[in-house]
Every structure is written in structure tokens, then in C-alpha cells.
Amino acid sequence: MSKYYVNKFLFQVDRNPDFLKRYAEDPKNFVATWEQSIGPRLNEVEHSTVHGFTDAERKALVEHDFVALFEMGAHFFLNLTLFIGIYDEPYMKENGPLAFQRHFAQRLQHWNGRDYPTVET
Image 1 (cartoon, rainbow, N blue to C red):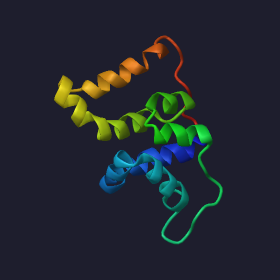
Image 2 (tube, rainbow, N blue to C red):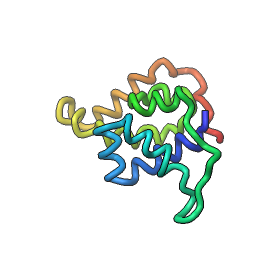
Image 3 (cartoon, rainbow, N blue to C red):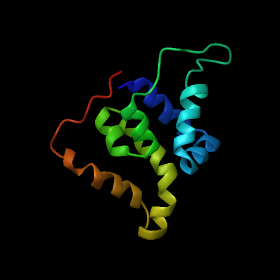
């Protein structure tokens, strides 16, 4: 797993309302667009050709599979905050405050008592 690249995606998408909206509405196309044209940017002039998502990473991002991303070593906080941005409002309407956070924790409950995957890059 390219933890750096996955974490860069999570960080950038979470902090850009337009990216977040596009990712929520059409994840498959947005992930492809990000991987091809947004992710490789190092700054306004320079681009990298080194990074790319693995098939498993791409699938997890497209499917909003935060459990798989966690298990692959995506940074816990970046993973959580991105999906709060997408799911918090609908979950809160149905189940009250912190509903998505509780759902996130419940989906990762099988990790109780185990060491979390490393987030080292």
C-alpha cells in the first residue's frame, strides 16, 4: 500500500469542499481524476510519476470502504474525518449526534484488543 498516496488523497479531499462533494457523488470518476491529475501535483509546476494506487486501494476508495482503508494502514484520523464529511449529516438525521462516529467504531470493533495497523509511511 502506498500509505503516503492514500493519506494524501484523504487529506486533500477532506479539506476541499468541491473535492468532497465530487467524491461523495461520483467516487469512481473522482478517484480516477484525482489519481491522474490532482494527486501527482507536487506544487504548481512540478508533478510526480512515482505514486499510484494499488487495485485494492482504488477499490476501497471507490467503495468508501473505510474499514479496508484502516486495515491497509490509512491514517486513522484522516480516514475518519473524510468519511464524517460524507456521512455525518445523513447518519445524524437518523440516529442523532455522533451517529457516524459510533458506526465507524462498531465496524472496527473486531480490532479491539489488537494492535492497530501501523500508519508509518
